[in-house]
Length: 365
Image (cartoon, rainbow, N blue to C red; front, side):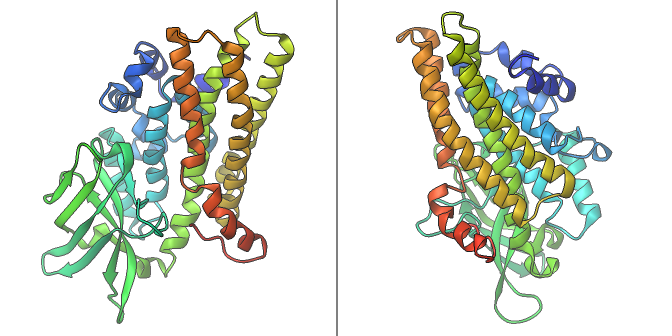
């Protein structure tokens, strides 16, 4: 089996036509947030990739999803990164409510309409953790009123549903508690800044069941969100492996490159993908928990180190500066460097991982 063939076969099985449609568009157009990439993604049924077939989704496993993101990253890395947030949101949604009927209805509606979900926790605020709530919510006679701002990255203009962290006064006693608001994008009071991608909620009224309080989940809201980050680490790692794979694929097809160099890059790339698939199998076998998140972080940082060796060497071997092909090589190389900047960055997680290895809880920084 050729390099990346397994990943592209998975795409062909679950999302027929997507790979072909992406190959018909120039890489520069696919890298443009206003380009056709999101539309092609939605037209293929990819928003329902992780939605169970019972809710009209594609019912993909974690292994399938990893391979899809890798294949997508090899064709359209920026699209792969953007849609990772959607898949993570879908995977997390089922754990955010005790109302199975509501979750089933939401998932079926999202899948049947090929709608996009985005996650509004990660904030560019000094000292704020990635799960720090950015909204406030208050109970009222007509529902729950939500206010605040968030920046859900590149899906802000395309989203159909926003999942946003909020604080709300407790219903079972004094003080506040964390909550999650499920906000339809067309809700009155929702606005999106086209330049910054900032989403503002101004006195948005939601039905009470669209606000999930920590007390509704026995105080386990943050724990569920934390363990769910295994999905994000896995799929974002796959997206960047795909972009690196596009470079390696070019090297493997270049007969001028010595065989020893080609095999070296192949071995490193496939080893990194195998490590990621190990995490995917853990998710498929037992879902997500604290230890799965820890393993997903170990693998993600290992992959970062592999890419720091593989990508510069692939670029050097490909050569040909100044050609259109070299421009694309440069774009792919620049993209792969971005894995180190994704949440949860190694520099911020060093302390929490040390504490976890000393039998403490794993916290997200």
